[in-house]
Structures are given as structure tokens and as C-alpha cells.
Length: 322
Image (cartoon, rainbow, N blue to C red):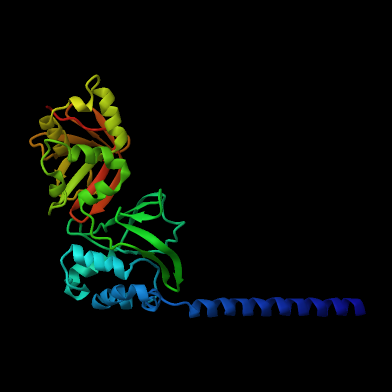
């Protein structure tokens, strides 16, 4: 009986210490979390982020990033803002219209926590900013980790993973402006062939068009699509297509308005900038487009949202009547 009594006391003591240590452990973790700075406090503590602090204050986002939530902030340095202000003709950060500044800042904020490991090696994530083209679809941010961590082709992460109680901060070396259709095409290496023909000899100023007001929906063939077209048009290939016909081909991939993938309907006929020529939408066996020559092109990436339109990537180049 004495042995049993001793064993019972031992079990009680062990249980007590286990529970007590668990409480202390949880309490300690809570204290650590409570002591973590907010994203706002991290920004305010960094001498190289003072311009960002002023910008966040002007747009009331300083309060937002101090509150509870889950955010990722790509924080441009003072030097990044200096360069942005010079390029855009502003004397200082206070000269930027508040509404414009707020959207630019929101284009640096993700609505959940993304460490650098969470970022895709090559792909799109959504910011909290909106352009003028879509009422609901927020702007896309292109991440390319092939050489550093580059965002929209204009800004690189130079300091990463500063944990906050309401998210995480990555410091970047460039201000990420609101991307146009041309900006997004130009920043993604999967569209280099398309950019090459858009800016080729004898073409209209597509760069200016796709940087303009819009809105446009661009069905953008990837590099492999042009490789395939080159084989299809052998022996002369893509090089044998006249500048005038290439203009028609390129315009055939553009539709007015901001048409999201959710707005595409089976059998829908879309009129292109190469009017009156059209193509058809087919969804039943996977999303694809059928051109006037009955050639099918798969839609392989959807809803790359830009400030003046949206991009959907295609596996093949569509051909109009030439």
C-alpha cells in the first residue's frame, strides 16, 4: 500500500509539473507575441524607411498596418522613393495625390503572410491595390526568383522576413508602380517573344497603346506558342509574315473591356481589335479559344490583372483571316 501511495503521489507531482510548465510555456509564447512590433512600428523604427512612413501616414495606412491582421508589406527604401519621385516629376512625397499614392502603396501589400519561401519561384500573387479596369479583381504582382526576388521586373527584395505581430515586412529597392498591360507583359520572361513582335519593325506603337487608358483584355501567347507557330508556318516561319499581317495577328488577340475568366461563357463569340474578325470561347473540355481557322488554343493562365486591363496566357497563337 505504501508503494501504491508513493506512486500515486509521484503521478500527481509529475502531472502538476507538466501542467505548470505548459502554462508557463503558453504564457511565455503569448508574451513573446505581445512584444512583437506591428508592421507600422517596424517601418517607423527603420531610418531607411522614413519616406514610406510619411506616405503611409498621408494615406491612413499607417493605422491599418498597426492594427490586427495578416499582411505582407514590401517596403521601399528612401532611395527607392527618391528615384520614383524624380522619374514622375514630383518634388517630394507630399506632392503625390493622396488617392494615387494610396493605390501605389496598396500595390506593395499582400492580404496574408508571405515569407520569401512562400513566394512562388515564378508566378503571380494578388496585392490589395485596384486599377481602373476592374471593380473587384485586385492587381497582380509578378514574382520572379530566378535571380534574387524581383517584383514586376522593377523592384528587388534586399532585406527579408522581418516578422511582425500582424504580418511580415520585406524591404525592396524600388517602388512598384501600378502595372499596365504592357508592364506585365514586359516583366514576365514567358512573354519575351510576344514583346519582340509587339515592338518589331513596322508595328504600331503597341507599347503606348497597352500603357494607355484601356481597358483591354489581351489573350497573350507564351514563348512556346511562337515556337509552335514558327514550325506551323515553315519553311519561312514567323519571319516570313509581313509586318501588316503581323499587326492583324496581334490585334486579333485583343478585346475591348476587362473580361475576367469567370465572365467567359461556352460558345461566346468575342470581337477583336481586328474587327470584324472574331474568335469563340470553348470551356467544356478545358478553357480554350477557337480562331476563324478552327485552330484551338488553350488558356493556360488567367486573370493577370493590370491597371488598364487583364491578361490571359495562351498556349498557341491564334490566326485571323489574313
